[in-house]
Every structure is written in C-alpha cells, then in structure tokens.
Length: 458
Image (cartoon, rainbow, N blue to C red):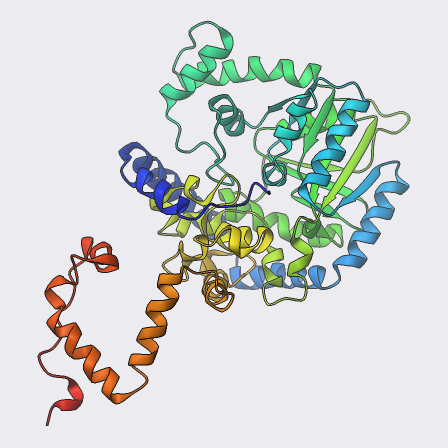
C-alpha cells in the first residue's frame, strides 16, 4: 500500500492530539503566519500578479494536455546525453528499481535531498531492506529522520520541533552535548552531514521540474544540499513525478518565479540547479551515472478526468499556510506525505478515495486555498467534488448515508417537512447533548428554532 493511505478516523484522532498540544499550536501559528507574510512580500514587487498566475496556469494546463509528447521529448533528451530513464507505473516498482541500482553499484550509503515523491513511495524502507542506509540531507528532513517522524509541511518539514528537541537529537548522534544556540546547532548539522556528502555512493533527489527540450532536471533549495547530493556521489538517481515536466527553459523561468514567491517570498531560491546528463569528458564534477525514474503511481488516472488540473500543482505550500484547518491540526493528521488542501485532494486521487475517505472533509470550504494557489487550481471545489464522490460511490459511512436518505425523504413532502420540524422543535433541548449535535454545539451556540414556521404565519 502507498504511503498516501489514510486509515479511517486517523485524521480526527491526530487532529485532537495536535489541538491539545499548546507547543504545536504556537509553532503552527508562528510558521504559517511568517510564510504567509513572506509570500505577500514576494508578490508585492510585481506589476500584475494575476497575469503571472494566469501565465503559469496556462503553461501547466498546456503541458498536462500533451504530457505524453513532452515526456517522450524529455526521455530522448536525457538518453541522448548518456542518462538512463525508467518509467515506473507504481511506487513499488520505482522503489525496487532504485534499490537494484544501489545494490548493483555496491552502495551502502545513499544521500537524499528533500523529495516528497520518495516519501510517497516509501523509498527509505526499500533501501534499508536492501542493505542501503539512506540519510536525509535537508536539515528539516534530517531532524525528522533522527526522530523517526515524517514531514508535516512541504517547505518547512520540521516546523513543530523545538530547539531543545533538535539539540537532544544532534547530541545523540555526536555522542557529546551540543549547544542550543542556532550557530552551534547549524555547526553540528554541517559536521554530521558533510561526512555523508563526501562518502555517499549514491545521491537521490526529487525534481521540482524537468525540462523536455534539454533533458534537464531542475532542483531548487535554500541549503545547497540538492547540489551536493547530485554532484558528489558517483551515481545520481532522480525520482520525477510524471507531471513535473515543463516544455522549455523559458516556461521554466515563469514557474520558478511563481514557486519561489509562493513558497518563501523570494524572487528565486538561493540555489537553483539545472542538471543535464551525467558528467561528460573534461568536466570536473557531476555523477558518472544518471538514472531518472519517472513515477506514475496513480497520476495517469487523473488525465482526462475532472481532476486533471490537480496535476498542475507546483508544491509551493501556499494553500497550507492559509488553510484554517491545517493551521490548527498541522500536517501529521493528513498522513506522512502530502498535507493541507493540496494533500486532502491529491492523496485520495492517487491512492483511491476508499483509502483516504476522511481527507475531503478536512476543509471549511472557505476558498482561501484556491485564492492562494499560484496556478489557480480550484482546490475547494475539488474537495466538494470528492465529498460527492464519497456519497455516489457509497464509501461514506452507512449511518451517514442512512441519515441523509431519511432527511431527503422527510423533506420531499409537505407532511414529512412539517412533522420533522415539529419533532426538531420538541427535541431542541437535547440537540447539543447527543450524537453529532454534541460535537457541533461544543464550540458554538446553536440557534433556537422559531416557535412558528414561517409558512404558518399569517
């Protein structure tokens, strides 16, 4: 089963834990407010924000509609420069291929740059089973790996960790006490990760984008770990979601501006790296082998469907930072990979709605996510559509379907309507004490029903 699956009831269970954790609440408020503010700063320097958003949207839509052609062009370009391309239908197939590459190379250590796609396919589990030790080199991901936890935010994966918790984790690795100042913690991280970069047999990265016309892989980071992971090890493996391809370098430039501004408020990230094939004769750095794994894992099912536009997502996290549900529950409630509104839509679509039935309900449907999305994906409309699918496919709980069926029957006739409203008026005092009404009334004051129906007034 994919790492995207969400057991029934898990969202509510984890959300309750996070809501009761004052530290998590403070961390979420601080981080999301800061990222939201930075996004505003990033957009403020543009003359026409909406024109740039629309340009980005059209680039993504055109690309998705001709995805097969662009993937074919990208494959030819990579192979023409000496790289290897493998298309994998499932996450299991992708993990198996990457593990085989590592084993055949005699690898024992793999340096990994931040990649949601590798989280999606549970690549670390497959590598460990093959005797290869994967080490996350993004600072936030590294902290979470030491803690045995998963990312809770696309851009800032460890936002719920305190400085004291990080100090304890780094001290455990060093076997000596590490100071709690930011400088000392950064020094400890550099010391621990530098050895990984220098000794890793294989470097594994994701790809923010891939350029079809040149066969280039584009990585954007603010720490430089993506560049080290892709350049120092002898073998570089890229895990590329099939939808991340861009036709040309000029179109890539537009999307990079949207991504950086929406994610961190920057015009461009600190390190923007383009990798075009393995090391060539006369070059001093770069991998001897380049393997690009193009991942489907349910994405092709969206092509031609009403949810096709979800493939336009550029993973900027803007929707997370404005979502009132995410800002209170955090990312862990959504599962170990994609969180917030984009995760609540994408995970059920990739893994199957029956395996993540609670996620479409993790929204107030306020529309803030859609307004924030740099490529204008109608996220809140998709969440509503998924709720309809839950009902039409009879995935929603039996009691829920029964309740709405009875309500529909009752209100389909005048007699049923009058009888139900009369019973509701009589049972009004108990409404906030029983069943769903109790949860609804816990955080709000329920309005009283009028003594007389409007239609009965003369």
